[in-house]
Image (cartoon, rainbow, N blue to C red; front, side, top):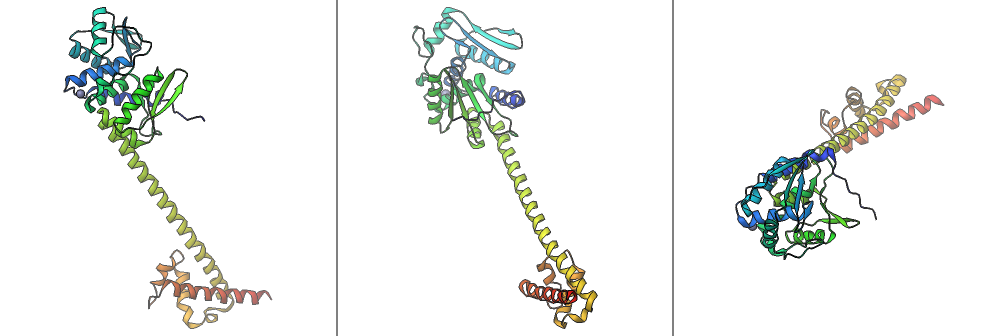
Length: 314
Ligand SMILES: [Zn+2]
């Protein structure tokens, strides 16, 4: 089965950028969370192994946050490099690399794919910080006026599954798509996306999605109501036009006398108020009557008119 995935392309980039910029403003209050966020960033880096860590990003705010986190956690300053349109952060120092790996709970053996160390994300605050780091590097989200979609690209399926299990623990229910050895974690539905953005700390962007949804629902309701009212109006004027045409033909043939006295007020009111509905018309009588009473009288008038017309043809 083919699952439709909207690739979050250029037209959606602005909302992804907005979300990431909001995430970059989330204050880091605890050391445990600083370490966990950096862990998410490093695990999803372009290169993450004992020889080198290399992260590429197009956003200055993300690059600056990474530098700030490295300084806070490891007390070293790393330079940001410009590589064409992108910014690059590279760690090549063996001692520092070893220190980082040890801090994340890895031994100094090389891995093909580093598994998620759950000890690093045991507390909810740290799990949220870790996911923020992951999203800053690999995430994207469709703008609120588009079909709801959020995704995180992941180069290793095993890691993808481990991150999904972490998200499930936080009450977020993502889906996964695999492409060869890489995976995509994705969320559909505005509620799930709002929850995830709020969990990572982008509550303003979550609110924007919620407001867009409320506005869309409101617009749909108004349209439905207008359509319904229009169709009722068409029905009313259709019936009224038929009645008036029949009455006018009858009046031409025999004048008002052809209608019994008790129907004459109805004839007059109908002809004088072509756009009025039955309920409106019923209230216009000297002695207001019920809708069904009026409907009965109009049926009588139609019968008389039609009979007269039949006679004329014979
Ligand atoms: Zn924490």
